[in-house]
Length: 436
Ligand SMILES: *[C@@H]1O[C@H](CO)[C@@H](O)[C@H](O)[C@H]1NC(C)=O
Image (cartoon, rainbow, N blue to C red):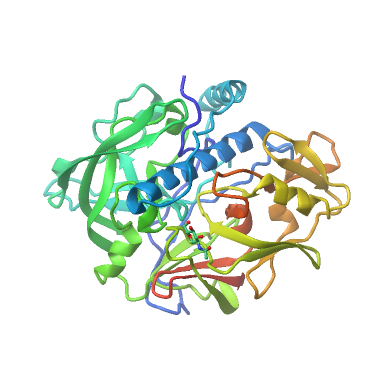
């Protein structure tokens, strides 16, 4: 049976995706917005933390970054020593699988367990008599490849049959490449497919000759995901295809005037804005921090700091901004220092590096890069009750060893939901602004 897949999270339902919104009034630059599906929390309807789902999500994040490190090494000849992927414990896997079977037999109303920020893209130039090929993808700043299912994806489940598939023969601009792209899974199996280039459009922004993989095999667990594939929004050094990711390609082809994309991640109205910023979604100035231009990640070059209240607890942090991760993770020894500052904090799950805090007095956790303190709201820090009727809540900052070293943190969704984030290719910088 398949162990943890690199690129998958929980399961879900998602609702309708509108077509790209018309340009809102007051945008800074002539970019366009693409609406994103709501991402829910890891909290169940009963208010209790979904431990198995969180475990799976964390393992997926770890393994995704291991894959990135392998890509980085292949692309640059540099990098760290790479350890083996982490398997999903079989009991967790079994419980998740059973829950999924149950869910599939229910009417899919509003499970809200989606932990991805997904939006629609289209691939190819339809030949006469063929339809536009649309795909729902997760926009992931923590990886750098685009992959979608192939028309010859081997299928054994309903979820698989529901995926959109790429039909190269239906596109007049499709070009097959003599490569196979693969993702390695924790159990040693792989998901893979042939490489193509074709025209790719996101929110009206088109890149031609965009490389991507059309997957002919995928993890069975992925079939329960609502998304068809992943669009990596990271930088080329971590690309397994060894090609420019969509956004960089679009910029270098002149499809966008301003080399920025921005995320607004909220309970409603979430969007990815391509080609600038949407100033209806933030207030005040954007604080930009230059990125480390060699790492391939959206990673400020300036070291970050973490505070609890007004106390600076951690300094010298390297921080990777990853829209494809749900939680915030730093090495276990550092996270322990954070919770030592939080009255009533306890270890909740030692294996997963999860802690709890008293629900009635959440810590004020913030990160800064020498400028403003960017605070994680109590709502975004709280993943739910440790158990029914508990007065302790599970925290979204976990102690995780990503294999990057002793000072590297991954800041995912739990962080990004607190601010407006701007990924700036022109300035090679990451920007944060206060939410409108
Ligand atoms: C930038 O990233 C590279 C690759 O991950 C790393 O080796 C280097 O230490 C980083 N530089 C700084 C200043 O953090």
